[in-house]
Image 1 (cartoon, rainbow, N blue to C red):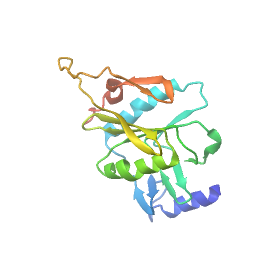
Image 2: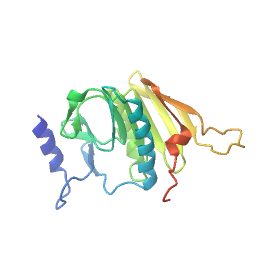
Image 3: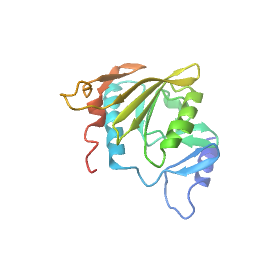
Length: 197
């Protein structure tokens, strides 16, 4: 079965391209995820990844950042920006065939609609409990919890860093629902995201 999955993925590599290309396949459509997204996208994902990784130290669960294909079916897969996986037996050759405990997608102009619609629906359908959407330019975060098979927007934030603003929220602490020991502030999430802009 593992060989069949890898062959299916290889069949969708762009002709003439050597080596691995980041691709996703959703509802029969193949999407080339290369080249990489903007710098702020990677910085935000790295900030969150680092905090979660530290929080999962000595845990069975591991966090992955844009480097593990989530198999939705035999002919369908996505590459979440950040996801937490707690069943190591379901990871094989760069693919994961299970249900992540947490998924984050950081929006890019080229994939924003797909992340908000198709991928969000797919994550709900397989039972991902907590789903985050981040928009780097506006420094916003939406947190969704799974309820009755559908995502419900639990909280949304727009980073306000000016301490003189009555809506200042940079120090607001956000905790992962299934991992109460893992918390981060909005400021930590968006730290250095303007670098290189």
